[in-house]
Image 1 (spheres, rainbow, N blue to C red):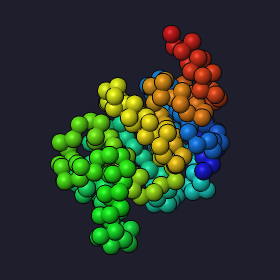
Image 2: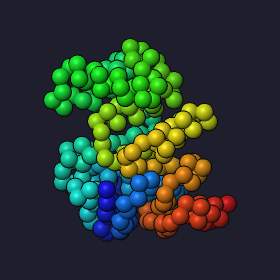
Image 3: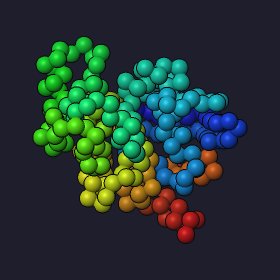
Length: 226
């Protein structure tokens, strides 16, 4: 899908979080990097209407998230760094099934679809386990399953490996960058993970300061922040 920002600015109580950003992106794996407070998370949250522009316009696949949040969230799934904020229901299976509420599917269909996505990520054996008793890596996989079961066209992942150890970080990275057919916008401080994207967008001071091939962008980022 085409992501379009036209002179987008965002201000929170007088603080500029994003400053006059214009960009068009349609790559399958889009990485977003930058220091804390640079604007990258605000950029990500504009994509499905979690944040609205103070000025300018955002279009994702032709949908304006600020004007039609329902349509935006139907096509764009959002994965947070802390999966606990996304886990709602008591058990793993119930949590995935909850994402299909209002889908028009029958109970048996919802159950089958939910189990299928859990099986795909090799956590079906946890279906009846208490969701909040899972390990951090398992919780993040559950959050991914709860998003993917709705079949979004775009997945926005904001620091999805921030709370994970090396083994689980690599597992989540493989899931997001290698195994999924969807378009991904990946916000990350993990430069090894960012290097696996098709293109990187680098933020600094609430602006986009560089867009390009990952190795080039990472080299510039490291040189300026050594």
